[in-house]
Each structure stands twice: as structure tokens, then as C-alpha cells.
Length: 228
Image 1 (cartoon, helix red, strand yellow):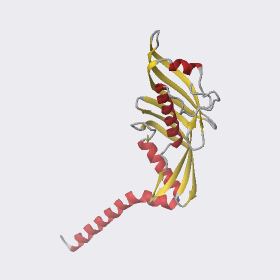
Image 2 (cartoon, rainbow, N blue to C red; image 1 turned 180 degrees about the vertical axis):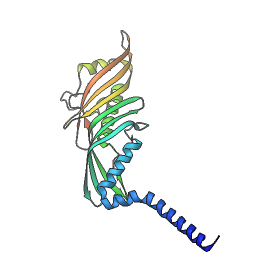
Image 3 (cartoon, one colour; image 1 turned 90 degrees about the vertical axis):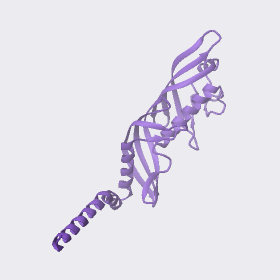
Image 4 (tube, one colour; image 1 turned 60 degrees about the vertical axis):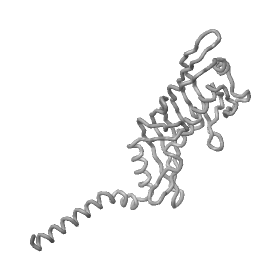
């Protein structure tokens, strides 16, 4: 190979290397040049595209089937802190329970090295609501509701709860939770299958219950209108 051909081959190889570096580094460089808001939005939209897996206290995560962040606002609160406020439209499943949610999310972000990452998961409020609903389901199934946060002065009990607790060997399987987060309350429509036995008959009932949750200090959710 002549010297001219060698020089041309070397130039071609260098150009290919520069092009490769630009392809992989340009988005990061552009994000850094535009500021943390653009970097955070990029991370948010990437998570939206690949889907979410949320830790909700089960042995497996709540996995999204459809997720869409809308009306997004990013506020940088320090050199390594920011908060994203957005409306989250979410459909997913966890252990056979379908979860559909629409509501406001506040997602704290922290700069971890060179990348922004959510401090408490991609959907903190949705995760806490599903945790509270599962805690309630398990307590109703076990017949031990004393540790649940209920705002009613009488302990949050009702005739419907009394009837449920009469079912022996009961099992409660949540089929779906339809969650709507309002300004003050979280409204949930629950579809659950109750099985077991009463003295007079076997039980295999499908129940639909309207539940209200409110956030309490410390991040826990309470049931101000009772458990059922």
C-alpha cells in the first residue's frame, strides 16, 4: 500500500472513530449544555419508554403495561437535587391484580455521579397507595385490622366489615384497583373476590368497594371513611 493510501486509510479510521464518539456522547453533552432540566426529562422519558417496575411491598414489583407522564414540571432545588411534578397515567399488574391509576406525582431526583436518578422510585405516591391497599387486604383476610390507620372515631368499622369478618377461612383476592388521586384524597374502586364459608352456605362472592385514602404525616395512608 502506498503512503498516500495509508494516509487516506488513517484519516478514514479517525473520522469513523469521531463519528462513533459523537453518536454516543452527543446526547449526554447536549443534555449537560442545556442544564439539569433537560437531563431529568430525558431520564423520565427513557423510563416511560422502557416501562416501570415499582416496589410496592409484594414479592414481585408492580410492572407497568402502559405509562405516560404528562404536564411535567422540573424544579432544581440544589446542585444535586430536583423535584419533578407530573400527572401519571398508569396501567399495570402485580401478582394478578390489575392496577390503573391517574393522579399527581412528585418525584424527587438526586444527582448520582453524572446521572440524575429518582430517590424514591418513579412513582412514590402510587407505590405508597398500593402498599396501603395490600396492607388493608391482608389485614381483612387475617381478621386483624387493629394496626390499620382508620380515621373514624368508632375504629372505622361498618356493617359490611362485620359481615366480612363472619366468613370463616376467608380468602380475599384483589382483582383490580382503580385509583384516582384528587387534590386532598385518593379514591379507589376495588374489585375483590371473597371466598370461605358461613354457617349457612359456602362463600364465593365478587365485591366492589369504594375506598378513600388520605396521606398522613410520615408518608402513610389512612382510611378516613373506614375500611369498607
